[in-house]
Amino acid sequence: MKLYRNGEIWGFEAQVPPSPDGGVVLGVDGGTTSTLCVCLPASRPLPQPLPVLSRAVGGCSNHNSVGEKAARETLEDVMAQALSKASCSRSSVRAVCLAISGVNHPSDQHRIINWLRLLYWEKLGDNEDVGILNIFPDKVAFYVENDAVAAMASGTMGKLHGCVLIAGTGTIAYAFTEDGKQARAAGAGPVLGDWGRLKRFSYVTLLLFLCKHGITDILAICSGYGIAAQALTAVIKAHDGRGPQTKLTKSMLDMLQLSSPDELIGWTYADSSWARIAALVPTVVSTAEDGDEVANKILCDSVQELADSIIAVVKRLRLCGEDGKETFPLVMVGGVLEANKRWDIGKEVVKCISKVFPGALPIRPEVEPAVGAALVAWNRYIRGIKDVQEEADSPQISVT
Image 1 (cartoon, rainbow, N blue to C red):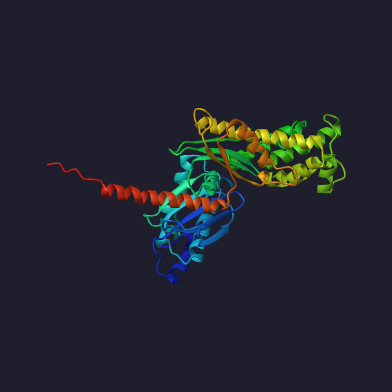
Image 2: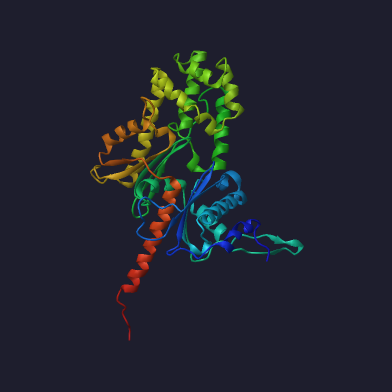
C-alpha cells in the first residue's frame, strides 16, 4: 500500500527507544502565520516548572487560509518533529489538543480529527485504488478547539474557566464556564474609514478576508490593525481639512519614508495586509506619549472597546455571579497589551474592568499558548483516567 505523501516523516520511529512511562501529550497552537507544537509528559502530577520535552515550529495551519492539504501537512509535520525531538513515537501519545485559528464550528473540528484518523488517501496509479493511512492509533484522544482556547489555558494551567482577551494584529474576547459554555465578542472595521470610493474598496477587502480566515481573525477597532487604521485615517482627515491637525502626520510619514499624506493611500492599498498595517501601532503609541491629543484619543477609545468586549462575554456567561463580584481569571495576551514607556493599554483595560467586575483577576501568561493547549490535553486525559477508575471502583449491582 502506498503511503500518504508525508509518510516518510515518521521514519524516525524505527530508531526511537521504548516509550517513556506514562506516555506524552501534544499541544498545538495553529495560526495564520505559524504553527507551534510542544510535547509534555502525561505523568501526574506535572512537576514545576513544566517539563517541555520538545518544541517544533511550522507554517500556517488555518485551512481557510492555505487549504486543507497544506494545513494538514503542516499539522502532521510539526507533531512528527516534536515527537522526534522528544525521542517518542506515536504509540506513546495519549492525547492531543489542537487549538487552531479558523475552527469556528463542529464541522471544522470533525474535519481536522478526520485528517489525523482515517481520511488520508491517494490514487494508486490508473486503477483508482486508494491507500488509507491511520496517522495516530485509535486510542489517542483528540481535542480540536479554536486558538483562543490555547491562549486561555496558557494562563490557567489548562483549565477552561474565565475570560481571555487577545489583542495583537487582531482582537477577540472569549469566555468559558466550567460546564463547557463559551461566548465570544469581536468587531470589524475598514482600512481607512470614510474616504470616498476607497471605503467601498476596503469593505471588499474585509469581506474577502472574512471568507478566507474565519471569524476568529476578524479584526476589531481595538486591535493593532484597528488602532493603526484609525491613525492613518486621522492623517488623511487632517490633510484634507476634515479633522484636527495631528503629530501623527509627521510620525507616520517619517516612519514610512513618505513625503506627503497623499502617498499614504497608495502605500495602504498596495498591500493592505493586516499585519503590515498593525506594525504601525508603536508609532501611534510613541506619538501619544509625545502629547498628541488625536493619538491619545485613539488609544483611549481602543481601551474602552477592549473593555466592552470583555464585559459583553463575562455578562453573557455570568462569570461574575449574580452580584457582579465573583472572582474569575482574566487572561491577557497579545502585543497591543504590552506596556510602553507611559502608555500601558493592558493596565488601562484592567482599570476599566475592575470598576465593573471587582473580582476580575488579571493574568499575564508565563507560558506560550501551545503549552496551554498541551495542558488542556493533559487535564482531559487525566480526567478520563479518573472517570474510568471511579467507574471501576463503583459497586456493581447484579440482577438475578
